[in-house]
Length: 173
Ligand code: IMP
Ligand code: MG
Image: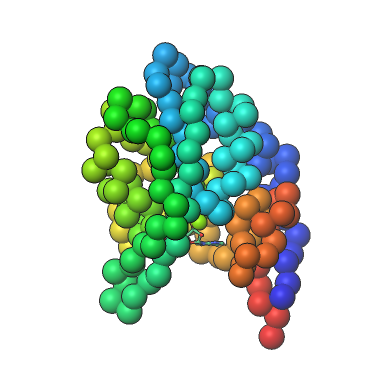
């Protein structure tokens, strides 16, 4: 297994996360913000981002995994769902990466059924070229090409999450 040099450096990541936090703080000024992190992948992005958001907020998490079936209609299994009541809350879903869009679209629809006051989505990475399901993204850290990346919370087989930067992952042959 080979992990190359940084594709996004620690400095680039920190600068972009600060920019996102700045915009989100302004957009949610005076609102009742509930930040919901999607685990495991978003754990580092989530904790960096919420510490830079100035708006008082509450946090919760979702643990989910998706399985792509052959007809490309994905199924999402929930391992842990949010416990906060979302009614009258301005919910911000925070994800590590959007690839086909299946996972996020499913989680978004589940949350909408619970009747939040508003629902927006923030993703650290957007792999647009792989999209199969259209899902509205309100805040995007970086658009990336169709490469498998690890680090900053993202994994290959639950490894490399602790790399402080994003790197392209190649399986050695
Ligand atoms: P989607 O449902 O296809 O959008 O898949 C999103 C999920 O797949 C993410 O939350 C990640 O867990 C995983 N994923 C997609 N692309 C990558 C990648 O390049 N590196 C690591 N995980 C990825
Ligand atoms: Mg994930």
